[in-house]
Image 1: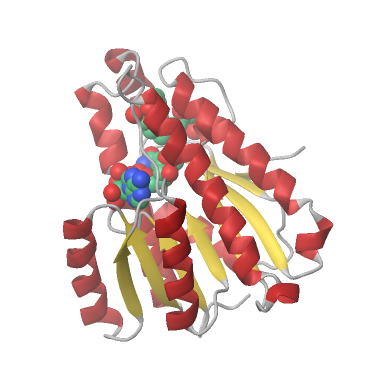
Image 2 (image 1 turned 120 degrees about the horizontal axis):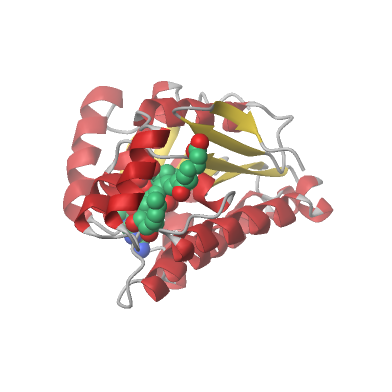
Length: 253
Ligand SMILES: NC(=O)C1=CN([C@@H]2O[C@H](COP(=O)(O)OP(=O)(O)OC[C@H]3O[C@@H](n4cnc5c(N)ncnc54)[C@H](O)[C@@H]3O)[C@@H](O)[C@H]2O)C=CC1
Ligand SMILES: CC/C=C\C[C@H](O)[C@H](O)/C=C/C=C/C=C\C=C\C(=O)C/C=C\CCC(=O)O
């Protein structure tokens, strides 16, 4: 699918990878409706994007991916403002393994993208008035290999990978023009990784050593992979892993 002239919704688009995903879609001519729970940073990003890509090509709406009502409202607004919904990037996610965080992490990282994928399918499938499209769920290489410093994070992402592969295999969806892919980045230069030094893993020293060993990608390197998954119509059920030290790999099954 060429993204030029298409409509895209990106969750968690205020900063980090979600901002880079929104940006690459805008650079390639899409209209972007991005959501985030952080209103202040979302508004700043909106102003920056409007100055570069035009006032009427991008819109921000404050919404929490853990709320079905807020996400339903987001999808309704997005589809009507965009004039059609063709790309959905389920990106919003957090880290944090502590007693105070792990259940919230599952709510955001696993239940959030499931909630939004269910909405996306409903809004995109042709037999329900949509025009078909592509969902890209943002998982992690942490969902492909065990990570002793982030078992809850890794578990959330492994669950998301298998959920995404499973809905990609649903013929009712494929026959109505909906593709589903999963992007699994390793460490990238965002607040999520910077926060590891503040104790978000089960072992700060060991986790930082792993980050140093694997290396840190720029957000633009990861955004190029998103663009590939969105534009290549042959990719359905694809799981694309990318890391600084190993580059890009389509995960074989
Ligand atoms: N940075 C990295 O190394 C990697 C990140 N990822 C995934 O990429 C995604 C984006 O992460 P980063 O950009 O790194 O983090 P980030 O912390 O820079 O950005 C995450 C964004 O999500 C938003 N957000 C958090 N909770 C939300 C909620 N309940 N509803 C709506 N928005 C919410 C935040 O406000 C923030 O703007 C996450 O799903 C993360 O797990 C995956 C692999 C590697
Ligand atoms: C080290 C991660 C540990 C803890 C998770 C925490 O919840 C933390 O707050 C979140 C960190 C975000 C991590 C992002 C990516 C994680 C990638 C991996 O765990 C995989 C590591 C190496 C794979 C090898 C490779 O990519 O080549």
